[in-house]
Figure 1: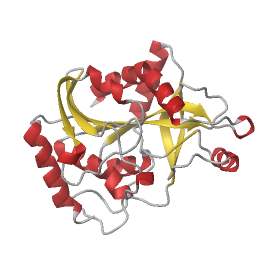
Figure 2: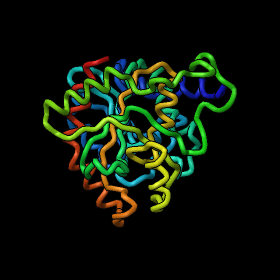
Figure 3: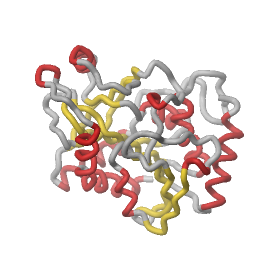
Length: 273
């Protein structure tokens, strides 16, 4: 972790050279959710390849660029696509952009994902506001010698997702009249989807939605002192006794159809900095 400080500095300088605003909010958009950036004004896009130490996003539905600008008049920096462990990246590499966000001035991280529904009360297309998570990714981006300039050795995880932001997001969903649950996200490595036995196990240990992202970024966000709002779009149902074949095309299509809900939640959340 000690080598990251200088890497963060170089990445930050590369971004500020292209966009000299101080963002208050950082947003990470998951699979099929990149359309939100259409609402950003005075937008500047920066490909990941042009930012030192940023990994390249290779996943379906991920543009692989930063969109910098204003949302609801608030300066934001948005990742159009993220990195995943199944692409061969370390969890530290995956979460590196969050370090850069914090150095740029971000105070609130909004992280989104497309996930599989484990809770039988959920339905495809529903939103889940993440209340807590379970890390089954066989690793942690905070492992290694701790750099106190970046955060404490043992960050507290009693409330990794900021409670007042959760309540505010659920209030938005009620006002806009769409289904939004409050639940637990479990992160696995992937890239394969889970077996029926694995889905039963994940539900048994308390997970409501399963996915292959989010947790590394949130761990680093908490370590960095950021407020966090996590949002999952339920793109397919993972009920072991009624399991259907899931395709990437279907998952991306459902994610895109849920964008109006996501946009309502995020545009409201940026005012809570």
